[in-house]
Length: 335
Image (cartoon, rainbow, N blue to C red; front, side):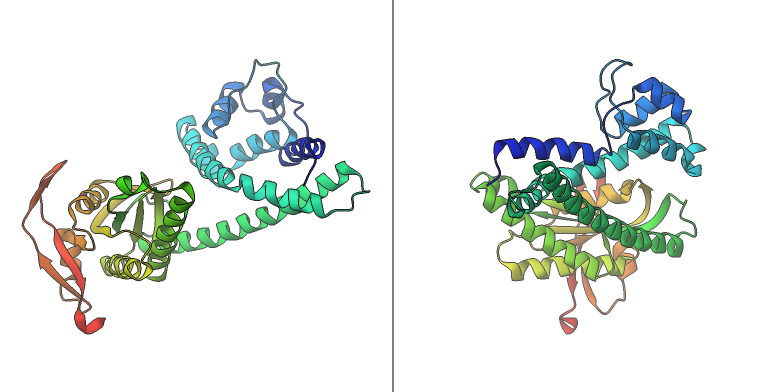
C-alpha cells in the first residue's frame, strides 16, 4: 500500500517526466523559439485535444512542447499544406493518442504503484517515484513504437500495392460491418464487469477473424466493428469467419454482418462514401447470424466456388430507394 504522501509525490514526478520538464514558456516564448505564429500554434494545440490554457503570459509549455511545434512544421508534407489541413492532421493524432492514454491510466498507475511498493523503504522517495515512472513509461513507449511501425509498414504496403502511391485518397475496397443483435437491451441487465467481458470477447473474436483473413480494422464503436479488405473475396472470408467464430465463443450475442465493394475515400485512417453507407444499411437489415453483400460484391464473388450467394428482393432503406441485398454463405463443400 502506498501512502498518501507518496501518491502525491508520484503524481508530481509523473507529470514532470511525461511533459519532459517544467512548464516555463508562454505562447509568445513558443512563437519566438519556433518561428510559428501564436495563432497557428494555438490552433494546432487545441486540435491535438489540449485546452487553450490561460492568457498569453501563463507559463503552460515545456521544452517538449516547443520541440513538437517545431517538428510538426518541419515535416515537409505538412509545412506545404494550409492550416486547415495541418489542424486536421493534428486532430487525428490527438484523438488517437487520447483514446490510447485514457485506457492506459489504470495500467500505468498500477505498475508505478507496484514498483514503488516493492522498492527499498529506506531509499529516497523521489528517486523511487522517478525510477518507477521512467521504467513504466519507457516500456510502453517502446511497445507503442513497435506496434506503430508494424502497422505503418502494413498500411504502406497496402497503399503502394493498391492504388499506386501512398498519396492517393480514393481506392477500390471492400468495406464491412458487424454488430451485435440486441446490444442495447442486453446492456441494461449487465454489470460493468460483465459488459467489459462481453466487449472483450466481441472485439478479440472479430479482430482475429479480420486480420487472419487479410483485412484490417477501421474502428470499433461499442457493439459494432468496421473493417476493410483489398478484395471482395477477402471481405467475404472475413464476414463468414466472424459469424462462424462468434458461434463457437458462446458468450457473444448473434451478429449481423454486411459487406459492400467499390470506390471509397480514405481520410486519416477512416473510410467514407456510398460504399460505406451501403454496407452500414445492409447490416441494419440483415437477419441475425447472416451475412449480406451488395450488388458489386456479389458480382465480384460470382463464380467463386468457396461461396454460395442467394439473391433477395430489393429493400428501401434510409438514403437508398432500391438496395438489393444478397445472402452470402460458405459453400458446404468448403467448410
